[in-house]
Amino acid sequence: MDLNIFTLAVYKSTMKTLNLLLLFIGLQLSLFAQEDISEGAIRLPMINLNASFHIPGGDLADRFGNSALFGVGFQLKNKNNTYWGIEGGGLTGSDIVEDNIINIITADSIDVIDVNGNTATIRFWERGAHAQFVLGKIIPVLGPNENSGFFVQAGLGYMYHKIRIENLGNQVPQLNSEMLKGYDRLSMGISTSEFIGYRYFSNNQKINFFIGLEFIQAFTKDVRQYDYNTQTAYENSRLDLLSGIKFGWTFPLYKKSDNKYYYY
Image (cartoon, rainbow, N blue to C red; front, side, top):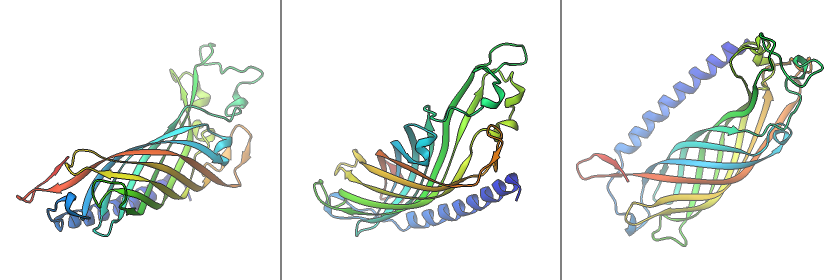
């Protein structure tokens, strides 16, 4: 299947799924009643902003160094302190371990020569994204109320990553937008994750955060099919691992008596 057609099909399917999830979330919010968080475990919708800092493992460690993942998500916690949610974020890093990315166009030099005969400025970055559906459980200990405590969480999602090659000035025809596809090592696939940590909801509704250790396993495959640099086809499936610390700030959606939602 043509990659552009495949990408378009994935995009349409993702947007359809997202619309259905947003509709379901809206229905859940309409059923939410006003409760006092200090009086016991409550049903609570919330939006999370988070940042993760990871060390790579598996095949990912042969390509990239340490990275960061910045994301946003929605979760709905039930009165029994179980919760579900969706989240997604962008993967970024500046440490590229592979050193033979574009050797084929440097000839006997370590530099790339542009159309004017000058040494081109080429930069390499790690770029990607990760989205997932999560399920978790909060154990109410060491907190100001029964909604706070240690938690465990599992996720099922999708990840992609690639080497972003920046050709400053766009003066190197060997690295135009089409040719870059043969060098960027774009990989994608299904992922699983585990997250253990501590979650805090203050009684005054103003300080709400979580922190813990996150582990991601992505079962990816290079989708470009051919590597221009080595002039060989990609064949092997990959196991890409990330492990590190994750911190997030939570915005609970408390309901006013006039049936309007507001953020704290």
